[in-house]
Length: 239
Image (tube, rainbow, N blue to C red; front, side, top):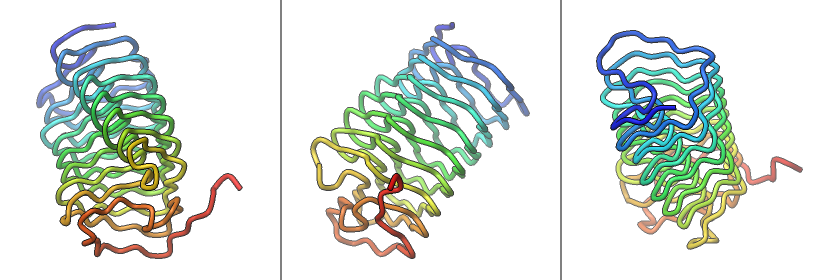
């Protein structure tokens, strides 16, 4: 366990190439970013690790900043807490990939119960994002002018005051393929629990996904959505 201003267990800044394998980061705390890890401008590979019960202001377990080309693979990120945004993970201008991870039971006091993406264009493949909570918006993921590529993910049973699933804000051209977005719940917008397209410039694209409620269940106050919405279904994946 560690306690620091950033990166309660480990912080890096333009240190070059780093690999972390088979580690357990537990009960670390940072006053600002990254309860366990704070990564700044590096290329880093984190494989087969566990992140549990870590806390920070932003990014309860992990925070990545300024062009980090990080790869987070086959990890479990569970039970972490952010006092503001990104219960498990906070990224700013990052361009890496997250593959086959489990994000569960994380909490953000404001937005992004599991993940908060700020101007980041990362790739997400095969992740399970379930049972996370935001006390404001984006129980699973809050996207702020972020355009990630998401493939074969499951985003289910997350909850928030506003938008239990994905909350898109600002300029976003996210591309989402073969992903399940189902069973998410929001208290304040019960009929629009899966996703919100908050701004007119929010134009994510969906292909071959299973989305509860379809486009009719999306909170879209501007009514200006013109992104691709192709070959998607609304079928309970558990039936």
